[in-house]
Amino acid sequence: MSTPSMPLSPGPAVGPVFPDSPALVIRGLAKRFGEKIAVNGVDLDVPAGSFYGLVGPNGAGKTTTLSMATGLLRPDHGQVWVHGVDVWERPLEAKKLMGILPDGVRLFDRLTGEQLVTYAGLLRGMDRDTVAERVADLLRALDLTADAGTLVVDYSAGMTKKIALASALIHAPSLLVLDEPFESVDPVSAANIRDILKSYVSSGGSVIVSSHVMDLVQRMCDHVAVIAAGTVLAAGTVDEVRGDSSLEDRFVELVGGRNTAEGLTWLRTS
Ligand SMILES: Nc1ncnc2c1ncn2[C@@H]1O[C@H](COP(=O)(O)OP(=O)(O)OP(=O)(O)O)[C@@H](O)[C@H]1O
Image (cartoon, rainbow, N blue to C red; front, top):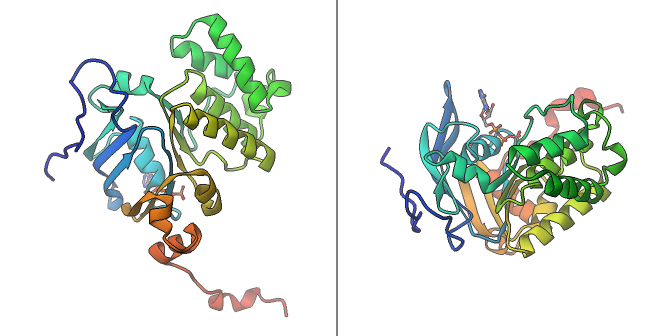
């Protein structure tokens, strides 16, 4: 595979971040697990200030792509830039710019919710007073104040998602990478999270979010990429990708795979 190149200037090898550069650029990203090709040459451009949805069927390669884009999983091929900073060449610089909500990663769950978010802030090198102020704000915004002193291991799945999101937001990153942030989250909390993310984007932040909920992506995101079998099938603004259809219909059209229940006659009760 030839060396991938970024079309827009990635900036100098060392130096300040370029605010005008795209929030995230992915070129030729690929990953194989044994015989299984999980990600097969993904290119993606997430403009700064966009709310970008990444959708695809189960096993499409969304988590693998986002893990490689955020420096959690080493790609076999390809390159990733966050605001012009090469994630795999300058990981510390790149990671300062990102807030990450990974899917299924273990948290330090013997800490209380408050301790966990505080720890995330201190790890980011923030001073204690700012951390304390932001932890209180985040717990309030995510409706976790009453459970601040509860161990994370005793949180429900939705509460765990929310405390992990708070940990990703504490250092006010430029780019938020969220893998299935709404999974297991109740509708009121999901609406609160959407409001937080919308105001984050309107104040200049960028978000890339993976989700299976097409309706949510259509309402919330301004850009979307459809990925299946490790390949991007369509990408652009939500209106460009969906055309005259709903995003859900367009998704089914692109991805295919609708099955009938013909083979499950034994499931009929009458
Ligand atoms: N660590 C691993 N070892 C082996 N195979 C893996 C591993 N991680 C992912 N895969 C495989 O790679 C493919 C892509 O998985 P991935 O988790 O990226 O998909 P996804 O789009 O996030 O799926 P879902 O929507 O179900 O979460 C799948 O076939 C999966 O089985």
